[in-house]
Amino acid sequence: ERRLHPSIQSLVDKYNSETPDEFIAVSKITEAREKKIRDYLSQFNDEDWWTDVFAECHRSRFLRGYGSSEGRGKPFLAGLDWLLQKGKGDAVENCVKVYEGKYRDEVKNGTFSR
Image (cartoon, rainbow, N blue to C red; front, top):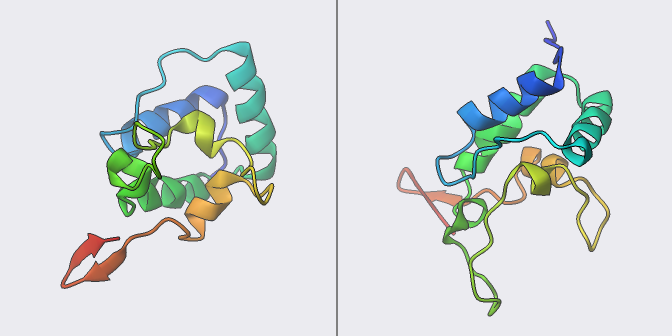
């Protein structure tokens, strides 16, 4: 049975409680964030789907800030704003790519590695 997200706040609370500790917690829902969350919930309103997205974040050292920064200084660190935007190169929603395992580390000997 699908569980739908009843509110913007419920998604933010889920994000804050289920993403890796390295992710910066969302403390303010601005008008821009509210609009973006509403837009994404209109497409992806299944709570279990978001559970899977946030679980995938734990399986990626890159998304947690431990990956290559490709010479750009600070390492990349995913967050709610990044999850709720489309990729620059392919215009696919970042949360969909995470859900599909694009950023998942390889598992070797029971541990994740890149």
